[in-house]
Image (cartoon, rainbow, N blue to C red; front, side, top):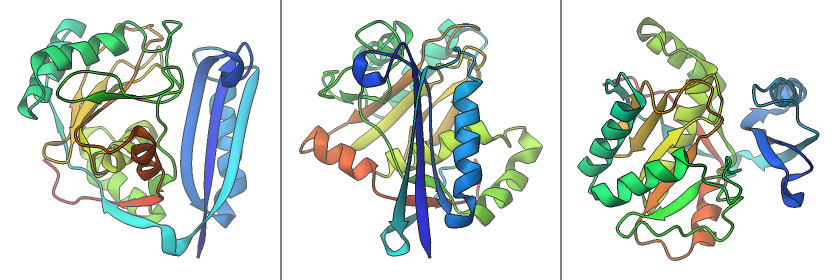
Length: 261
């Protein structure tokens, strides 16, 4: 069976390469009979995004042989409470500390996202790669960051996962996509943890993820209406950022983890 990687990125003010402002992105790995509908879905996402209408949308469709696809169990999900942005940031720093990341480095990561990680003070297309011990940013292009590609759920597993988590109120496409990406990132050699919250102005939740603790949701990490968000991948012992990003783009399909925390 062949799979197809369908990727979308959208910007305003020209393409990303010409300095356009990032608006939206999406990544799915689907069978051939779902390619057309997925392209339509991702283009619709780009054209109706809360950050505004883009004037540049790029969609890439690429075949992926079945033998190249690896299967991973989704990270278990848990939640830490927070009632304000300040509390959310403190919780994120606390969780990262449990994973051996110093307060100084964790706070630097939080500030990097909160203040706008791209050179223009806006959102990045991809993720920051940060040395987990020094806080040094390692990505060669601070506007692009590193990208995660070729990731999705086994179709039948996604529906089963929705049923598993419906009772705790997280059966949404947004969380399913975030969990898929976090699972792949934290299973990539060299990754210590991921910190993320969305650049969507209408979505204020985020998470810290690791292979050790799973996917830990934090209900508030930014103010409502803020267009700033992003990801930090904390790494240790990687040979090069280029090799690390190549590993992040190996095709993966998720299966559900039945033992939720």
